[in-house]
Image (cartoon, rainbow, N blue to C red; front, side, top):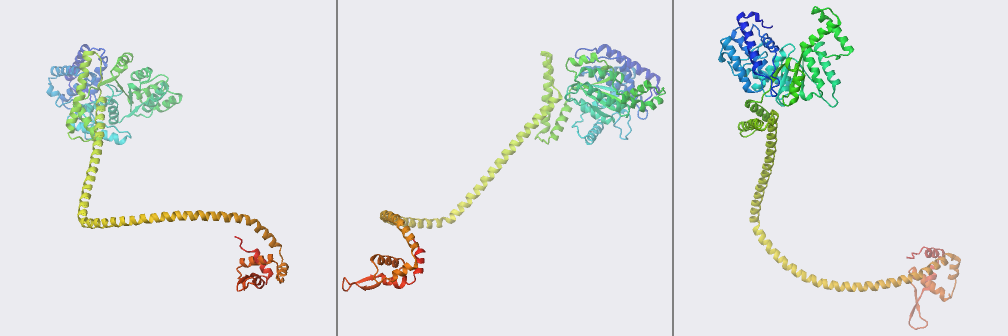
Length: 605
């Protein structure tokens, strides 16, 4: 339910109008655009935006004149003050507004700024109803935003590690105020790393808007850009979803994209954007909307109704950097960036923000320092000192050096990595020293035990020493005897060597004889194989065998170990001779066949 200004006294309404016009004229006259402040351009839309913001007030919660004037100061600060780049201009605007409240409403600074910050928001009411009202409890306001951050991280797969310091909370409330307005668009100006995109996503989540952002990949061109715009517009117009189209200047690959955005901000549409099937879907679904608006359901009227719905549901959030000539050129080439957008300037992080971010970063990294608060104070002092030095360098040398919040985050990252590496190094050294001390203690205990054992074993060692001395004497005696034995062994070895040489000579001689005898043996075997039993019987029948037969039978008897018969020697009276013939007749020649078999099977080796 919008607040009706007609419910206010006529004198108060006239005073509000006059004060707003005075503020507008003064700002237009005093705050002129310069190369450093190229966005200091104001038009009559700003007056309309002030009163549009005041219409969000609800008579259920706004009942006094003071509350209305506070809202007027807040809306004027948002429309005119959020684009100011330095504290000097902001203080000048504050004094201008206070002079108007004192002049027209008889309210002083104490009546207007009853707390540290003047903030209006519609998401802090504990009852759940969204009333646009002043935030009186800043701590509760911050805790509500922190709860939204936790809820966002729980709902979305990719969470945001945000710190809800007061400046960030104020930027979230400003973006929520813009998204609350019909066709409200935002131009967020600040260096990279100041939180423009993260706070925009959080504000979209708080206002129940679907955040849409393009993904610039290799080969991303105008066709892909137009497809993304068409899909976003169709969701706004056909599905009636409230969308925030978030675009960062680094995602602008071609200036034609900025020209398209200029048309979207101005008219809510682009020529030749939709396909034939898209137009058919628009006609089918928006015909009833055209009838509800009291227009004839022609194609032109239906499409205009569709565009009106798109403009109502689409909120464009541009995150741009004011550094460089490109920003000034774009403001000049595309006037809708300032005419149709509410500007919010992201200033440098204050000390409170730096301390809060550092504390959260150290806690998330699981890092605990001995004097952490003092270390954080030193870090923020270093960062702010570098910022002051950069400003001095710019004033003296006319060369800008940009110290962004990303630099502070890099400083925190460097500190975290350094401390962790040193902690790991120290823990490793401590562990090594601990192990070394443990080894030394264990060695000391072992030495003590060995000393005790040495004392216990001392008598045994003495006795053993005596035994060793006796053994040494015995060893010396044994060594002397061993030397004597060695001499004898050497002599015996020499004799054995000589005998071995003689034996080898005999062996060689026998081998020669064997080599000579083997052919005769082979010949004898051949002859033996030719003998028959009749030949043996014929020999047996001889009464006086010739000398060759006697010699042969003597050899056979020796082979088969047949003993000779002892007979008197006729040539030597009293002497005896060996007669093998008689033994051969009775034992060998008795069975001729067996004799032949024994001779053939005789072992010749």
